[in-house]
Image (tube, rainbow, N blue to C red):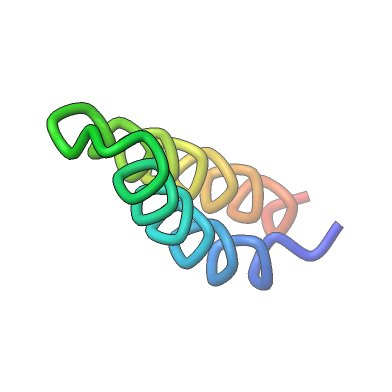
Length: 55
């Protein structure tokens, strides 16, 4: 799996999810959770990509 592409796509998707969540549900107070989850997933992918380079 190409983690470099994922680390670019995940933050973009998380912001899109945040916007859709905020607009459709009309609840901007909790839509930031999507960006936090995206950041965590990006960090995990970067760590996994680092592990692949060492092996």
